[in-house]
Length: 359
Image (cartoon, rainbow, N blue to C red; front, top):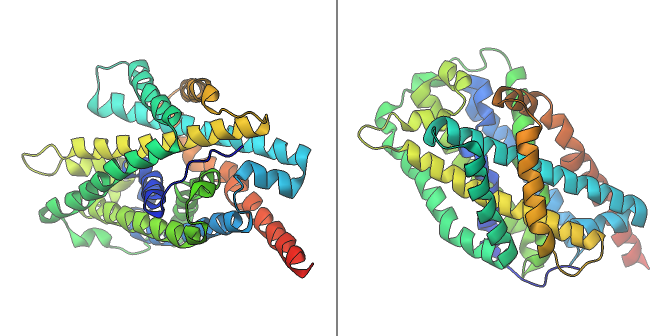
């Protein structure tokens, strides 16, 4: 059963922007390409537009249906539910990765003396509260905080102008195109491919015909803001430092004299993960209720959030293992959920709609 609440095009746009930026305001996958990081953002943005267009078109071809409903229609009841459960696992795992990254960043930069468990509990309580209040509250929350997030990114870009060195863009393609392609592949899956979760949200849009336009424009805006972040950190830190430091945006913000701008980068991370985390938990809770044909998704919100945080502490022994897995394994792990299955679903939906139209 789909929640009857509706959200506006503007609210959907802000949710997508917040989810896309999310943790990449701090953990920038493009950094691996050094001086060519800006190229990575542009290439991955193109792939991101293609992916969000696929997700949006799937939603238009299956009006009023969530990802779970669509999978059951395409693959049949048994296989569709099984693939739906795999997607719910992927979303929970995605939440655990984001939550783990947030906790690790917090205890290693801002809240050094604060126990990691305390930060996880506080953030988890806030996520549970928002999701239980419903999608409309999450959307209204985005109207308040996402403009702040965007303003901070633009402000940080301009206050660092005096520290910029355009020579940091050179040499271009020093190590060839392979590192750029590898980083672009990672960035396609993180963050753009993760927007597949919005197949659980699109049915709530009050004007379904606008979904492709709104989603695509939102991804472009998020990509341009990410390009600002990447160019700014590259010109401040240089290609070598950009590749080596774990939190390049946070470090570059420290170059602003007499103002602790790095605190604002942490605020952006909190805002982005608050949006993405809430959307994921909402999607999983709604998905579970649909698979088991229950009317109320709210009873699953707390246990799913607890499972997500438990996974974030259990899967990896340390942040180094987490980072290696994210760079080397995650793109291939996410590919079926983000690309392969959606393309198959899109083709099948097109065929079904064509047959229906012919009849």
